[in-house]
Amino acid sequence: MIKRIIEDNIHRRMFQGKAIIIYGARQVGKTTLVKQIVSQYKDVTWFNADELQTRELFEMQNLSLFKSHVPNRGIIVIDEAQRIKNIGLSAKLIIDNFPETQLILTGSSVLQLADEIQEPLTGRKFEFTLYPLSFEEMALHHGTFEEHKNLENRLVFGYYPEIVTHLSDARRRLKELTGSYLYKDILALNKIKKPDRLNKLLQSLAYQTGDLVKYNEVGQNVGLDKETVENYVDLLEKTFVVYRLTSFGKNPRNEIRKARKIYFNDLGIRNAVVFDFTPASSRINEIGKLWENFLISERIKFLANHEIFAHVYFWRNYNKQEVDYIEVRDGRIFAYEIKWNARKRRKIPASFLNAHPEAKVQVITPENYIGFITKE
Image 1 (tube, rainbow, N blue to C red):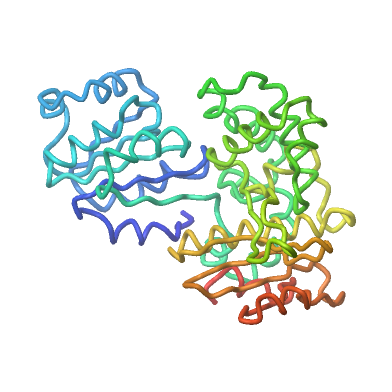
Image 2: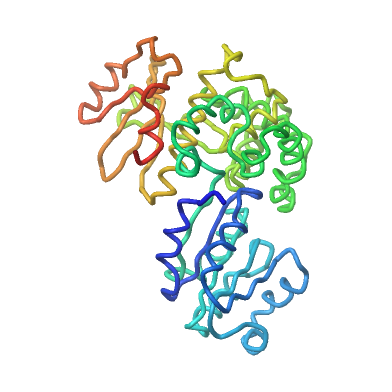
């Protein structure tokens, strides 16, 4: 059993009169995590929203019906709660009328679940995001040195739990994962009018990892207009397939303010989309992009797992000088340049330092990356 770091954070929020909401892509281990958490408690009632009876029960918002089917103490779990219409109103009824009950909801779509619960559960919820396994979690599981030895495998096959535990069968399992689960929540929204173009869009984004993404150019490549590309990317982000970084800047004359870069939450998914599982050491033209995506996705996991609140960006000016990754925490700027080749010296651009002299800067390479994505 690989322990998830957010498990302890969730335990600390139990039985405080608020719902616990756990977001995360399908197959990242939400159900396994919740089962592990509730195994330490008595009186647990589990509902699966993939079942019609569960949906019918909670869509009625009938307090009398709830009292006859829902225990008045202990833990209530509703798995894949985004499938229940008006789940936020039902959750509010439970929280307000069952004070000795802890409600836990899981969902694989922020778009569906967050919209449903935002207003009804204002001030009545703790929210968490579960990502695929992280470098740090695997290092805690079997040691930092052992996980570092697996680095090139992670750059190719990623960190989905099923892939990590079945690495010898990773190619086939990733193919099934991208085919059966990746788009399930997106297509269920009925907002994708051209699902065949969705895969082409993902392939285009995969090849542009770490580059500036222009929606009109991507649209021309895949046969979609700019607005549709932007809507699809938004859906992909809210179902935890990709992650967008926007540009950082305070001077509109010199610093680009409206650009974005797009990274995949998991490199195994990224490589499966383009059908390329070539060993990382052989991918001379791509290794820098893979390394950048790896470190940024691992840093995003690290921040979420340890409840470190930060705004994240990249920086670029009109002279095409860049800083790969920037965090703003408590008003302080932290700038990071990401390099695969530690021998190839690269500094933070002087133009950035002149514009933001207060920033703390660091270059991240395979020689020092562990401290960037773990609590050493």
